[in-house]
Image (cartoon, rainbow, N blue to C red):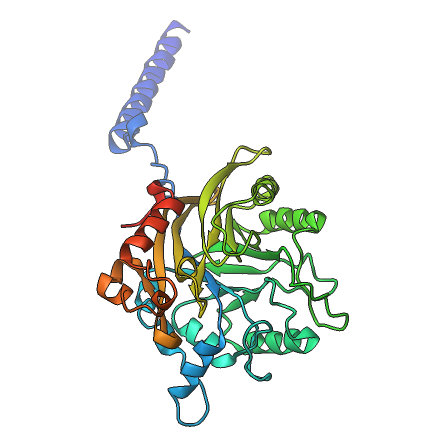
Length: 391
């Protein structure tokens, strides 16, 4: 028995030795260590989206403007290209350009001037060719031609290229259908309101209507809905006192309300002269909103020195992934509407391209000889905060 046990122990030892050798061999041929574990993939960087945005003031097309455009042709059509030729290259540096279209534009009604405007359709095409894509249409002249004017204007803008958005008119029952525009992956909600319509009541049979600033309940609903739909809420508001650089308390109060409701950028128009800009803080979430109270006239055939001076607001909108969009690099570029005597050769250009020699030839000097380059620069310095004034 003892001998048999010894034999069993001997064979058990051999077996253990063989198993140990096998483990050693396997360990050497397939080494495993903590440092050789499978590497995790690097996280994908969040995409940064950027839009360079601009906004311009009143595109106010008086008779002198469309008549000179007609004289440039031989067949009775209109050539508005020279109106924007000097400033158009500036807008090529921006991804999205907005303007307040102060007059009805269409191809159906006869052209007419103040007090009830109708502008040939060639004007809209020239503005589009100059780089504008967002056209705000809520203003005091929107009902100038009644329901016929509204219908013709809507048909005109519907005929324009798909990347042109005319906004501010709402068909009855569609007030909560917020106009939106996508640029470089950033979605903009575009709303427009007007303080009044020159005493002209809303046409009962018109295809669409504007929203007045007195209807704050609907404004609040629209802006809050826009905030849910878009990355940036842009509000064009036609308000203030004509020919006055003074901002009213009514403007400030409404700007604060729009900020609380969710507006990211407020573009003011209507006074036809420059007014200052101000930043508001939301009482709801602490976010800030830039309000430019009035960008003045972009172009017109008005007759007073202050009406010749406007500004283009520019800024950069940046969004990282799904984060909140950020507005930065805010600047105002002053502009001048120039014409010679008797409103000849009306055009718009940047102040930085305007010369004293040309200012002294401005037709407005017939009645206002104080108009010169220094006058313009002083007005700009008084109205545009220095931290926003572009060189």
